[in-house]
Length: 511
Figure 1 (cartoon, one colour):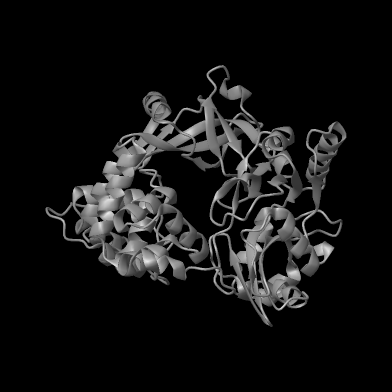
Figure 2: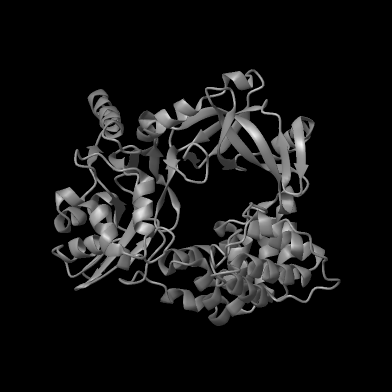
């Protein structure tokens, strides 16, 4: 398949509001695809790269390149080119990446260039979510959407399922079953405003601590233990202490769901960034283990000794979990049998408040009758955690890519210093509606003090309200901190830059 066909479909899906029409476009694309192309096509449509990161930033992408007159780039050819770019290292790596990126862009038509720049720049383009791709695959092959969805849950990868489905047809979906040693996509939670809302929605439930660690899926097969993250990256060799603890469990074969965390001497959790850095450490694992020992805390059991537990209710799965995992390795929880009881509701609220006081992220409220919906945001799991907000000043903005081409999108955010200047805390393009994009593009150009190919630097006057999940250390920004999962809530025309939040307030949140 030519990249042009994929880029055209991406553009058409972005321009099409109707879900049925989006599915029809995707089905047509999948019918034209070879099985081996399917994993790459699906990853590109979702705005991701199979290589994840290839070491290419705006300094490389901003250089213009003359487009090709006619399309000739194949999807797998592009994937191979990006793999070659990702493999570049050592002295002169930047110039070599520039050369390779330039060659790829010059082989692309204007439309293909727009698609590639959006893909490499990391901005969302057409909202082709996995759920739409599942429906498109089903329509293209005559399979039932529910069967495709279940295969993806158990196969761990939409791309892998798509390749098998396109090559062998719907009957091949039956081959995707829960297996020890093959990770499945984790069940995820929706959000509730507070504990009371969650209780009202779910009825009889369990309120569990929400740990701010790394989600892990641990597979035990006799003495063999393997560990995957929520994105199905294997990290077994980085967590020897978790492997050792899993081998001590009184079970032969099991699939466990939980979080890896680090605890300080007083029992309080260490910051997520430290845990993430430890899990990401590949070089001297032994030294990293000594510096920051980790432990797994489990909240679910998906399979045990040859039995698949996915279709059992949470209450039954937890009974099995309690049988094989000792209390110190299980997440703290409170069972709420009757949410209508005033005393019980008060206990649930107190549990949530105590969880926050203990330094954890919040709580997850889970229906006791809920099955494990692997790979989906089940309505029977609701997370409740405080959302932080800050009023920050826009310092600059970058031009968007793809469907945001021609609009100022990625905002540079600053907090006020004691001397009246502003320190940059990070960037975000999340939370921006089309109307907000249009408004801020016009307004920021009015405030521009310099214009560059990447965007504009502006007078620090415009105050924006930003929601975020926390503050973490970062050597990239001048104050040594940045915001986690920052997104725009609204602009605050009623506030001046002098009323923006201070750097000290941000550091206080970090502390």
